[in-house]
Amino acid sequence: MKHAPVTCAARILVIEDNASDVFLLERALRNQNFSFELVHLLDGGEALAFIRQQGQYAYAPIPDLILMDLNLSKYTGEEILREIRATDHLAGIPVCAWSSSESRRDQALLKELGVARFITKPSGLDQFMEIGATLKGMLNNPLPA
Image (cartoon, rainbow, N blue to C red; front, side, top):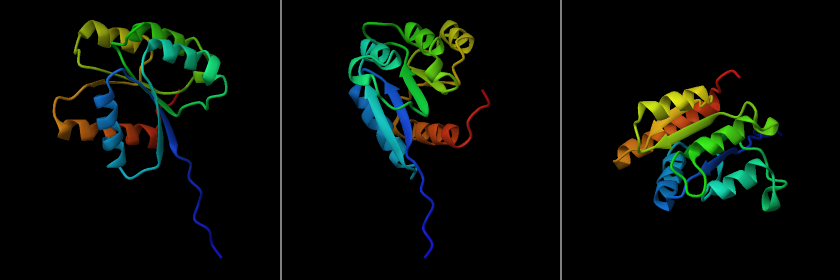
């Protein structure tokens, strides 16, 4: 008797304070027909606890991809990115930043901090659904570290 290969769900960490954006993101990913687990953190404080493996995140599994908003409460996206890049256990994990801002300064800073991709938050549902395909592609074809 042959068994189907076991595939693990992709673990995606989303750092985002807007619940509507997370809902739409999850819907966009489900439309891509692949197995994933979405871990949602609401603010910069939670993100830092996760990155530092503190409290309830002491034994949290390492994500396959991190998607974070640049405009967070408590800490800035830049502070969170710097913390991610300074942490050994998250080395090599692709980080995508998304924001409604299209600032060239933000994009230059993100490139400096090693962000794999900058995604402008879409205004329409169809554009939002495209993000699912983008993230699936990143998970299936990771960039070399």
